[in-house]
Image (tube, rainbow, N blue to C red; front, side):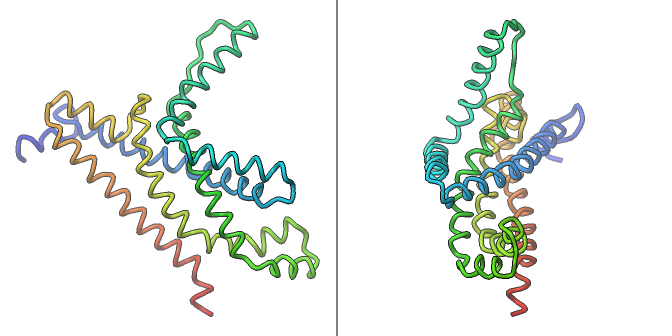
Amino acid sequence: MPESLSQLAFGSAGWGDEILAGVGVTASLALATLPLGLMLGFLVALARQSDEKSLRLAGSIYTTVFRGLPELLTLFLVYYGAQIGIQQAAQFMGAETAIEINSFVAGMVALGMVFSAFASEVFLSAFRAIPRGQYEGAYALGLGRISTMRLVILPQLIRIALPGLSNLWMILLKETALVSVIGLSDILRQSGIAARVTKDAFLFFGTACLLYLALALISSVALGGINRWAQRGEAAR
């Protein structure tokens, strides 16, 4: 093994263990953020097509704010701002203990809110692509609102929204690198530490590039399989 590549070895001889742990943190953060972002995005999309004006306004403000703010600024607001807010609330209630927000949770919440703002647009477009007659037909058969949504609308919604959500997942996977600035030991942070210690930035940042590309490739294969599964009914027709 060339001397420079030996720095990627596992154990005390290299940085392989630390970088592999960073891969686990990056994948875990993305997978934990995804359901939060999807759930919030779906709820915001429902609000934006609601008959209630206040809900539509609230949904529009939410998407405008979190699509307009830089992701890094949103991360700082959640991590530092929420920490200060909780600390002041605790002091107001008489508690003097220091409170610190977990960086993983802060990253998940911040990235989840950004993801949900964009996902709500995808869901909203998918809702509008479903003919109104689908709702009317379901109601005519005696289905209630919840049953109509679960049995009639959601299967079509998933199929229509999947390509857009797949793109958002790939963006989310890259945006997890931002959490390195709040101390979370992801791929980028671990690679940066190794680069500073060894003075071999090209090796470790190049390795980080390859790892992100590998995660993207795995995601593309998985998303392709999910897309084929979602389109199976269309192919049969």
